[in-house]
Length: 232
Image (cartoon, rainbow, N blue to C red; front, side, top):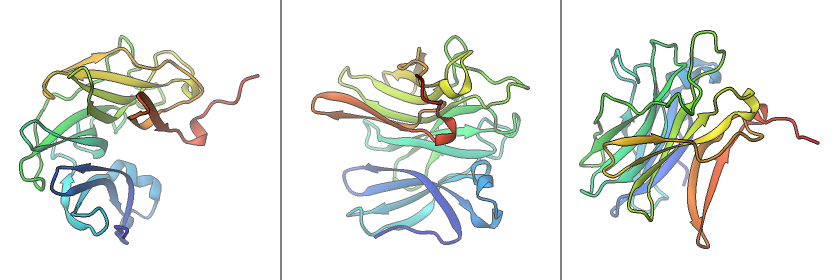
């Protein structure tokens, strides 16, 4: 059974199992905006739950933009959700702000003890490190890509975060890379060099890592308008 909201656009979604029920998170924006391209700058994070991943109960939005001024006072974008060691849920998400017209992406997080009400748990977001990642400046022409955090507990016992990012000084359609950060406790994060180098993609969006036959497999998406022309 599909979850549909006739009066909203719905896109990017992910599911987490807390051991008792499934949680579905997704981006949503009102169709009253008329132009679907406007949805990105007006997105909030919807939330629904299910006992069987078939029939869904719609809950209040997990996150909406903050009142500001803040790194997330314009819109909320895609992220991922983990079950914390204490049993609560933590959403890692992308925030954009009015201050830069939505051109700078930063990563924050919010916690819930009951799986329904989420409270922001940091005012110090994770930001792209200019040593390895392209930063935004007025006149650059493209946004500062640092979004779609995918967080998972690795075999090494540390939490790892994969991020849609952009390489420094590279042609835009070759600049898509996977950013990387690590943490021992989900609260304190160290941004590291990227896990991939520039290739034929301008963006590696909503990436996820899965273990298949003993190997880590990375999956991502890239629109055709952000792919480089095939080489010789």
